[in-house]
Amino acid sequence: MLSGADDLAYLALGTGLAAGFVLSGALRRGAHGAAGEIGHVPVDPAGALCSCGQRGCLELSASGSALSAAWPSEGELPPAVALFAAAAAGNPAAVVARDRYAARVADAIRMLGLAVDPAAIIIGGGGRPRGGTSAGGGHRGAAGPGLPPRRSSPPWTWPAGSACCPAGCPSPRSGPP
Image 1: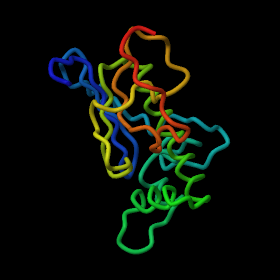
Image 2: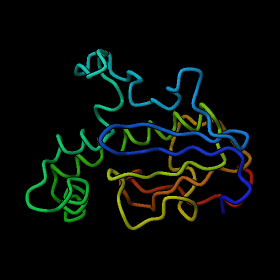
Image 3: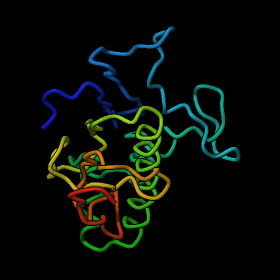
Image 4: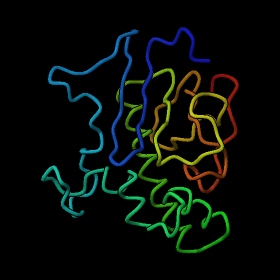
């Protein structure tokens, strides 16, 4: 599905939160090598102090570290697996933590979509739910409200009912809206 795409974004949901870009077929690093540091975009002026010195950075609520803080894992399961399993089992606290995390990850996806309008956003790292694919084949439009109307939506990648869209993703669109 991605063959021939000149503009791609990769969202890394790891210990931190970062993105990578291939634009016009070339890896984009930025003038100072900091392209894609979206984890340090402040989204909550009253939020916690980030290690970068700012308050309320996106990384504080949409990263593996944020997920671990919200849902400390007991045993050998990684925090993401433990949280999503507990939420799927109906644990109310897990559902709240999952939905809060998912909303911030959706903000990151939306930010990438609006900033560079890539053909696809590929989601990877330990902080993404397993079971879906990380490129193509998923529901479209899962980044939610705020995206401008498009001729066709890029392939947002998490399946309906997963963390990206707790209320359920809209149906894939096959043509212009």
